[in-house]
Image 1 (cartoon, protein in one colour):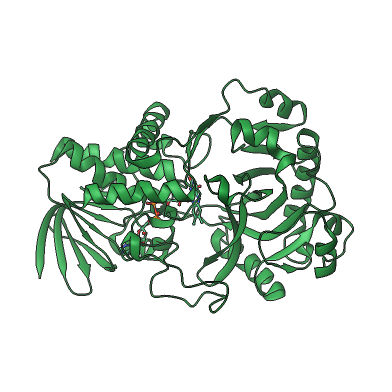
Image 2: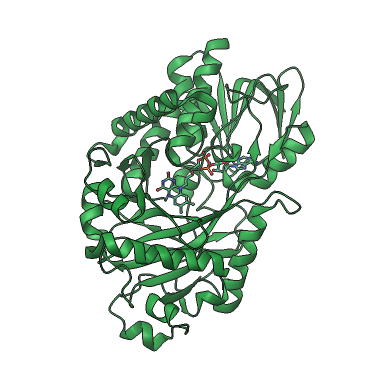
Length: 458
Ligand SMILES: Cc1cc2nc3c(=O)[nH]c(=O)nc-3n(C[C@H](O)[C@H](O)[C@H](O)COP(=O)(O)OP(=O)(O)OC[C@H]3O[C@@H](n4cnc5c(N)ncnc54)[C@H](O)[C@@H]3O)c2cc1C
């Protein structure tokens, strides 16, 4: 079977969704298909229920990472509107354009169910000065916090709109792409042809993307990995920051090694959760917009970036190996009180129970100094003491540290300023699968950008 489309989009994450959305607005005459290996939104369900099924049973496609909405579907829905973090899209399309597109995506989210979600901003905040006085740097951003609940509503509404004019093929992994008078897209049971191809396969498509780049002779570059812990403490300790900014991205330069440690993914009144990447259990965090779902704790990650190039260049493998040690020692994620870590002793069930911070994730009490490299751990401890100066209580003995948190990045695909692969006319690579975005807003903005590029030429 062969069917022709003007544009095929591989992947229905934010990158793919916003490409499809913008194509329907700018070039409604085009025939567009989205091919996605995961399920439709309402069919996405992770079987882990904490009772009958406690750990990953390796479903054919992971409902957390794949399907309509991509990796972002059950995320906290924090759309950070900034060039300071979340990707380097601006290096290709310019800072002003990147910001303009992120704001445009925000306006679509507001029109399709997100209205009412608050936007927070660092503009004019007194915390910038306070941070600098304590050797911390507060990065600039506006953040729209949809929350896991509203994020789902927006996706549901966008699908209802798009399905009227775009062909969606779910549960259909793309096996290969061939360049022939446009592109041929091979799935198990069919071949589709198109004039323009948008590849938006995200983190879960990283291995596939690497293989495709090799087959098509597309240059790639190694990327970094971020490693660290998730901190959990009483929400009141950070409430002066989270009430005003929601998410504060703070960077600290360590005195000992001059490494940068940064906060990441702050979840006021949230919960700490397990994340499963290819069978390796790491830690992450969520929070809900609805007050009914709030907890008494706030959590955020403290991360250090490592980028390997010569002779070893697989930064992700390094991160994976560290995460495997924590899984080997703890059977999954390890939790430790800060007081135990600095005293050089492991945490135990009893010490955690006696502590004043109630963990929101059932992790194994243990010793993170046996897992994380000294340099990384020293940096994290230094930063906790620095944060204690702007949020007293951060360095309390009972503050909980969960490990390890790892942020994996795709290798970076060489792309021109139209996000097209040089020498492969009409082949666009966007979102996290390109290695140049690492966030909902940047991935979505890259989708809008290429849709407009295609509308100009088709
Ligand atoms: C738990 C969690 C929480 C997060 N929270 C936030 C947050 O609050 N804010 C934020 O900015 N970012 C967050 N992120 C990151 C964010 O989700 C991603 O940056 C974003 O989803 C990237 O969008 P994308 O479209 O590039 O890729 P993805 O969302 O990964 O979508 C790619 C899609 O392509 C499909 N695919 C892959 N290979 C193939 C193939 N061969 N054939 C067909 N389909 C394929 C996948 O199934 C997937 O659905 C979070 C991520 C996770 C996992």
